[in-house]
Every structure is written in structure tokens, then in C-alpha cells.
Image 1 (cartoon, helix red, strand yellow):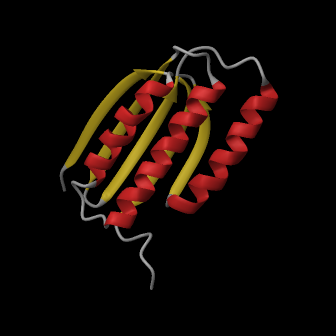
Image 2 (cartoon, rainbow, N blue to C red):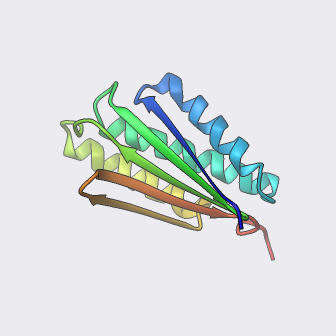
Image 3 (cartoon, rainbow, N blue to C red):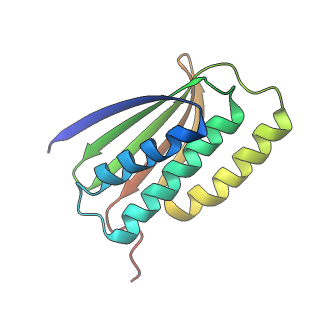
Length: 131
């Protein structure tokens, strides 16, 4: 099975959200995902971008690593830069992100390691289809 990895680094500025969202949707379109699944990917990407931008200084670099393997799209959002000053703001952004991501993703996880903070998202083709 073929595995493609695409990396996109953008400043944490709202004007780059569309670039990231369109990249994610185009990559999801390379799988057998339905229109609804691709829309879920767009929503997840939007939420990942908003979360990253709201919890980090403006202008910090955000790195999106997309991995296509079969009918699965994985996204790793590396949160660069210094965290925003407000813990309350970060908690509010995280709570809303969880609400959205639970609705549109197969898996998501916030984690930190030696390379920094990450948001990891998985979306599989057909996972959002009704039975």
C-alpha cells in the first residue's frame, strides 16, 4: 500500500487557514472519501488551525503533516512557538476543538513530546456514512 507524506508550514495567522483547509480537502479527495467525509476533513482542519492559532502567539509557525495511506488521512499539527499567555483562553479553545473533533474525526489526540505539542487527527473513508 502506498503512503504519501505532505508537509505544510504556515504562520499562525488567520489568512493561512484557507490554504491549509484546501490542502487537506484536496488530499482527502485523493482517497475514496465521500463528499461528507471530505467536508468532515475540512471542518477538522479548520478547528485544528483555529485551536493552534488561538493557543499560540500570532506568527508562530504551525506545521501540518498529512499522511495518506489507502483510504486514511492522518494529520499531525505541530504547534510551534511560545504558548499564548492565557491558560483560560487555551482551555476554552481546547474544549471547543474537542466538541468539533469528536463529531467529525475517527480519532484525535492532543499530546506533547520532546518535539513539542501536537494535535493528531485521523479520518477514514466511509467512517461518516450512515448505516
